[in-house]
Length: 109
Length: 115
Image (cartoon, rainbow over all chains, first blue to last red; front, top):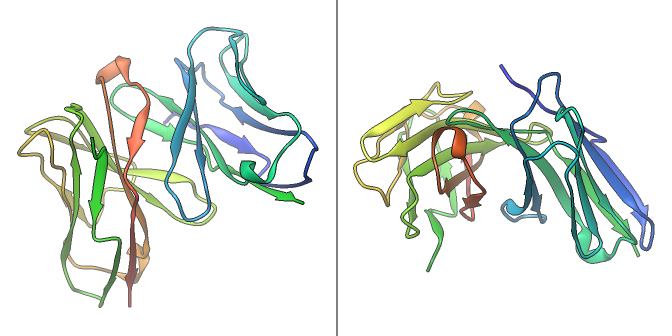
């Protein structure tokens, strides 16, 4: 079945440094969604990308969907302690969502 | 709107016991789903439903049953709890079905320990 691989598994950064997580698939994706889960919390939707090469920004967060629609990235500029958590990518096929294993971000003040 | 609610928040079971995790949403979403989250394994789909009376299996359905008698409720039943079912369980809902799936709204989760 369809799978999405997410790297890195963990990332520790100093506050103010940038952070990027990548989501890769061997097959073409119809869409990609990104979620954030704070420690002890539940996943919260951030954004959905559907078009080849699409780029969307939310303040310090930049999301990209690859030209071949097989990969995506989430980039955070100048991380803050509030960015701590696990970031998941997800894609949906017919009736089912598939999640990557997540990247856990720790920000050192 | 309360969004997606789950009860209980915490539960401890003994091996062999059965229980039902409750999930409800007040957004009139057709699609609802159950996931389990284990360390390093992301979210794995247990069962899902595309509307009242319609359910299907996800990636890890063994040991779990679901039903969907109303649009609002989607309970998850553990038939005979096993230590391997120790996990955090999330219920989610979304607008759309089939190819038109959209963002999912997650409940706060149930933290289950099976001894």
